[in-house]
Image (cartoon, rainbow, N blue to C red; front, side, top):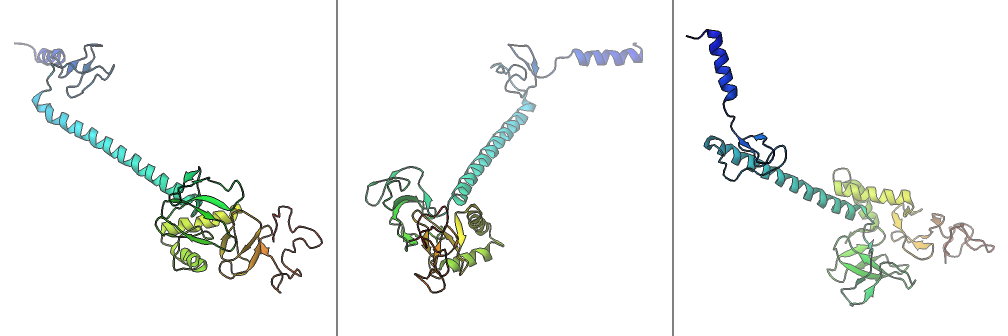
Length: 267
């Protein structure tokens, strides 16, 4: 009979010398876990004749399912982030209309239209956010809205948004009200504020509605209260007497002087 201590040593030695479950890599001889499909050390493939023990096959299937599920979640997250970035680019870019980055063929008249009004003819390529179509509009001083010829979506150039059946002031007031609880409205209002800070927009000196200017001279008219405005000075074009009253306003070209160093002509 063995001494009790020797029996413990014999059992421990037998446990150490017994082959561990798994498979040996034919390239680097590393001993891998039974359910591992490739070598942990060198990445070599599992021997084709190795059979996973029956009691571990269910675990292997579970691991495979977990891996596939993890890959699916990663793919879904990437798609969600990509869609979110596209939405943010669309929302935070210049709202309606968005200048086309390149020329395109007009779907209405099939003419080639450039992205910018390079030749000064008042025609400019636009990409419309609300309806997603590309078109062109003729830039006229007293016209601040147009309808997409493809889907008939109403587009306001002043607000750079679509607000059919609402005036610019009603739309902007509604935007401020909804911004408290509506994330999209909050983004729209923030865009208007950003345009105000960057100089892309201004507030009408009379009714305080947001206004944005297209190409051309520095004269514009508020689409709400019809006040004539000087874009360069951000104030009224004429004095209290209306058109021709140079006792107030920007007084452009009075005594042959422009109203502002950056004046582009106020009519």
